Length: 211
Image (cartoon, rainbow, N blue to C red; front, side):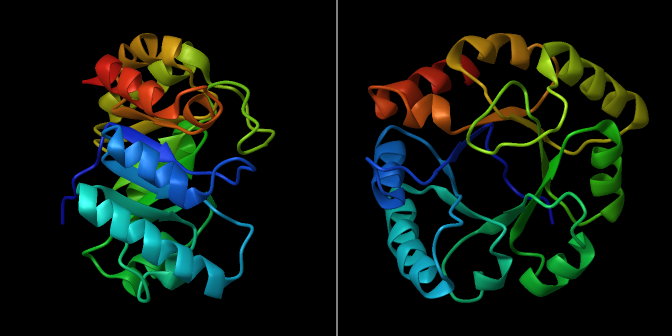
């Protein structure tokens, strides 16, 4: 089942000055139509309570809600899918649990990762990164940069891989146009919005660049 995948993914994060709920409200009011709830600081009971509130906001604004990793909660909340950050997750098993109706995204860093994700036949899009240095999700993966995405996108075309590729990790507004020229499908952003003085305005600026 082919799913709708936005070209702009907004990720919430644990912040001291804004709750995940407040981040979602700001993003949706600014026009974001794809919210990825990324929280690893709460127990399931608290996650479920917060997701219910976030799902209500997303429903009001017609935004897609994706959970990061917490696929085991999909049968208890009104979310449209899950994004798995574990590159070696058993995607087939997860798909069986969440059903074909839910969107399933997966993280990648290399062409080989993307090939493995695509070969599973059950993943709807790949979030590939990091583009640049990121503090949102600290890791030791090689930075891809513009050239890295260009090489991956070209190779995907050569191999006939049609999986939507979302660039993620340390992306700022000024990077958007160059990234779009590489052949990727879209971008995912967190800190560039959340650390700005006006998150809502920043989201609208990203949309101007992408659409």
